[in-house]
Length: 387
Length: 143
Image 1 (cartoon, each protein chain N blue to C red):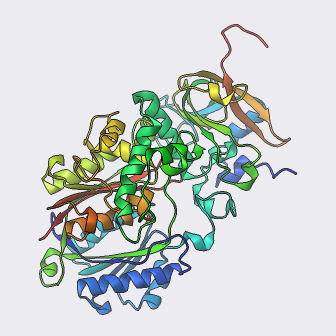
Image 2 (cartoon, rainbow over the protein chains, first blue to last red):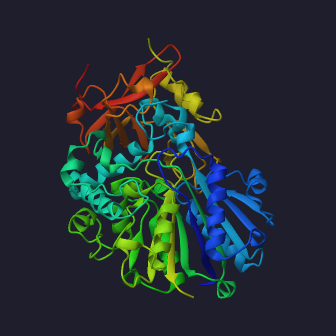
């Protein structure tokens, strides 16, 4: 199983605030780009996974695909890695040979989700929190603010340290064409001046929704050798679910249930944290990056804020992180943002923010925000350059 | 002009938590407990060890401490615009479970983690009573 699967095609459409393109058309464009990237034909795709809201039954005619199966997979921001895990199982058991993971999301077409007030409620349907909504708890920023507040209380983390995440990632995005932050660097002062959304999170602690499509094609390492391009190995992967921390009463002490996801992924890959050249951490809010750096062990618990403020996630830091700007400053593709950036780095295609000689990337995703704290699902993937 | 007050049933697909909300109308604070494990839950669940067997609703202390909180400045829904800034607090109840609510009788600036709190019932409408929390008064104090 280890190292059996390889990613051989990547397609990324334009990503932006209001593209006006329907979601299935975004998936079609991404699929075409990925097929061209891999040197494959439509007929080669014998497995299809519609990611995060894709309608598996209706997509195929529109896309012109004729696979053996078409499944929908939804685990919020953990969807991309979860689909990768499913694809590995499919490949390992010989159910298919070329699996297309297709994502297309256009929140602008159904109203603001995390945006200010406009059409309030319409797009926030998935972001009510059950009974907490009776008390005005709405939207993912609120649930992450609860974590940030607790982290500040326990460790003395500051708003300026949250701001360091925003500034560092914006610096990456500023030199990355096609991102929201392209050509628009931020200062810490900009962050501190941005209005409060839900304490302690300010506007610039939050990412913004974008429209866009991504397709990733996964095949066996054996088949990958026959294809053009630069295959990227899946070295290991794992999952964890925050319900375990909920039962244990420790849900606010942790950022997701990362421990088992990390342990599984690293043991499968047979490498340690020191082998990781670049990190792509799911980052809907600045606090997410700080807490994940701690949970993955790049720094000790409580030291995530100082770690980022010291530049350790920057281009010359200990672990360059979210080198395309992430979701905070790049674009929000629900977990595919992180996966795509890791693939670009390992293929040596990350442009001005390429980490020289990057061979191993850590990718994380979390999602399923339908609860009462940050998120439920967490998934980890370790990717490696070459075969 | 006020928006319709949400009802707890708007957020539940079944009547599992109905005893809790009915008790609130009587100003009683209940939690679900597993007879076998003694573990308390909110909202109602199947106990991870014993499932749905032996779950019962019992009177709870209604006391706890603020575990974490946020002051909300952004009106994520139009009907919340008149309320901002308002607080959302997570109470760690004495019995163990977390309870999301608002803190009342306390300025937002004074809310802090670890603050002892107690339940207070807000009869929002004839049909809906919401438990909220307020800073806990000194033992023995009245009124």
